[in-house]
Amino acid sequence: MAPQATAPATTPSLMRRMACWLYEGMLMFGVVFIAGYLFGTLSQTRNAMDNRHALQAFLFVVFGIYFTWFWAKGQTLAMKTWNIRVVDRAGRPISQPRALLRYVLSWLWFLPPLAAVSPFALSGGETTVLVIGWVAVWAILARFHPEQQFWHDALAGTRLVHFEHSKK
Figure 1 (cartoon, rainbow, N blue to C red):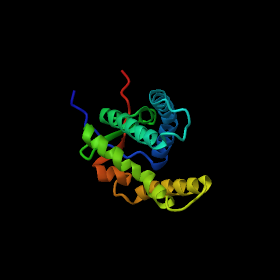
Figure 2: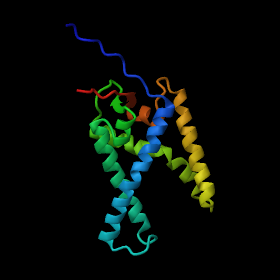
Figure 3: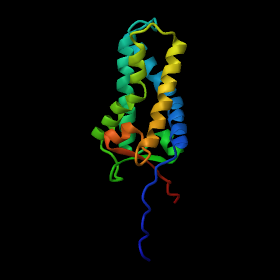
Figure 4: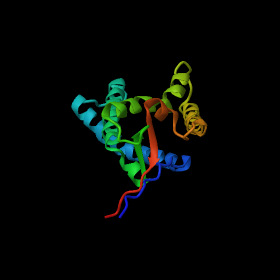
């Protein structure tokens, strides 16, 4: 029996990647809940506004650990659900340093609009509209990448590809 040639990995559609992105956001509520509870218990924080910046820094680290660990393994739970895998440009699994770089660069989804609103006293609704608008623009910009990849993936040297789990 001759070995089968593997087809080149295809980029999942933008709609599928955004559905995965939204599902990932829902799953992150559990991570935030557990991490927030742990932080509040360990720091003895009684008011949500106390230690707010320390909590934000703690969550940034917890998210970094979560994503770096899962991406270095190839997929988060949401990515498994949507049959998406993160690989390097050559199609190999990514290393933890590359996964960490991807994590830092993935903040391009949120930091530009948050930096833009910080000098102004905008309401929560106005900030939400700006963030959602930027997320839509950032997602649509993937259409201009030669392989339809998100630009933070291009900068990190990673790719999102369709991955079908083998059923044994």
